[in-house]
Amino acid sequence: MSEMTVETISYSIVVPVFNAAPTLADLHAGLVEHLEPLGALYEIILVDDCSSDESWRIIGQLAEKDPRVKGLQLMKNCGQGAATMAGLAESGGHLVVTMDDDLQNPPYEVPALLRFLEENPGIDAVFGKPRNKQHRYWRRAGSAFINRLSNAMFAQEAGFKLTSFRAMRREIVLPLLTLNSNQPPIGALVSTLTPRIINIEVDHSPRAAGTSGYNLRRLLKVSLSKFLGFSTMPLRLLATLGL
Image 1 (cartoon, rainbow, N blue to C red):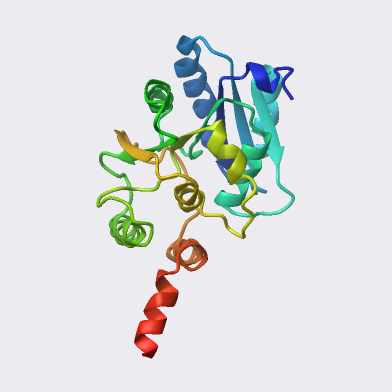
Image 2: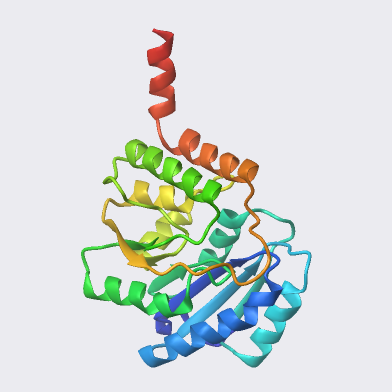
């Protein structure tokens, strides 16, 4: 645990970790490299979602070497959304970034999200929209369909994407933590709290190591949780079909 207080931390970087032992050291080095020039205090919160590899041991090593690193370990595998929420609950930054552990969200793009919020006080959250997604075809096609459905359900502009690479103001994080749900779809929850959200384009890198923890079945489960739990559109559709 760092000795920094909530009042002094400008930026919190929250990373849910699952079987990411090969990428954690590079992720930490990249974040330090690109956050240091900003000249503000920051913290890096790594939340181990009960990994089966050496992730927790490496998080411990990073925390020993760098007092800005906080390591949390969940008692069981709860999923990316729950792990992210656990990290948000421990964060103290005025601006909070969430990102993946596989380096597909490049650390050099983190300052771009932070600067956008600092320069645009009328925006509460900014989501990084990949210029070119480095996923397999089925994953890109599925994401495109889910995003179109999401835009319709949550009255978002066409082309808007809710992604896990996002920056939020503390004023959004605090009420977000009061919304308790199983497999929390954080992007959808943020959109229910404020309409002042926006996309900016960011790079999306190929996966540095390993394979994604999201197969088709898990993606469908998370998507259904979002649509059935945070929109009345399915209920209205069923009522219309019933009539």
